[in-house]
Image (tube, rainbow, N blue to C red; front, side, top):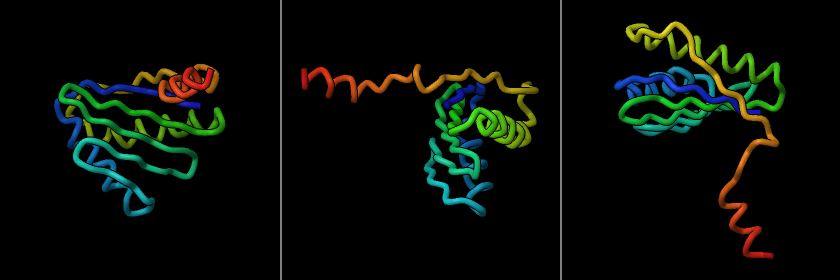
Amino acid sequence: MQSHARLNTDKAARYVTQLAKHWSHRFEVAFDATSARIPLPVGTCVLLAEPDGLNITVEAPLLENLTKLEDVVADHLLRFAFRESVERLAWTRAWEAGRIDPPALRVNQVGL
């Protein structure tokens, strides 16, 4: 299960770095100036900075873990982004059946 949120901000890259460094003390975080992959105990968080916003995607195997992950990531991000005028993130969930993998679709079409 996956969930996505976006924080409209011009400080997205800063937040990626802050969150990645914060969690890198406890987890094996992979990050660069504009993206991060953070493996947490209940699931994974992927951050992608764009000039006008931060995309946050969390993934967990169970609904209860996904809900917890949304809360944990939002809580940490909003503490770092306290100057933004955002009180909470709006998450949009995508279930496994709703996923589309374009590269896999192309491979399957070639094999037909």
